[in-house]
Length: 148
Image (cartoon, rainbow, N blue to C red):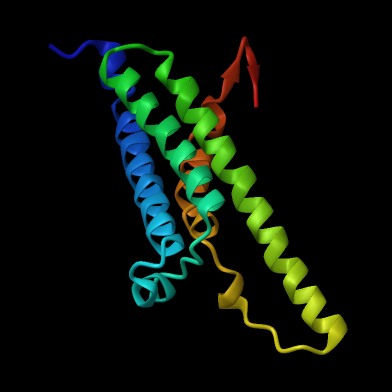
């Protein structure tokens, strides 16, 4: 039987499950590419094969998936995992975006050829999903009565 709290958190649970699966899949692809397996497919999907990048994506994915598990169990605390997952995803997305901008600035200053796809990483394009969730629920982020 679904309680009112579970039905209220159902969209958040579905979002956390989707984001978690996407981030874990991205982590798997990065790990496989780092091991030297399926390099052609990795290049096609803009996956550089970075073991630490795979670890970061796996941690973010695990946070989302655990939040979905808690929300599925009827625990309202699962929303906190969702918010932390969104925050981490956006922080690392911004780091990757800044690195991409730094590469562009370096190429402009040195006269080198700049390849924007060369700096693309799964953490950058996967951050679009948490960004959408963060924008959708921006009015509902509430920390002890302080709305963010």
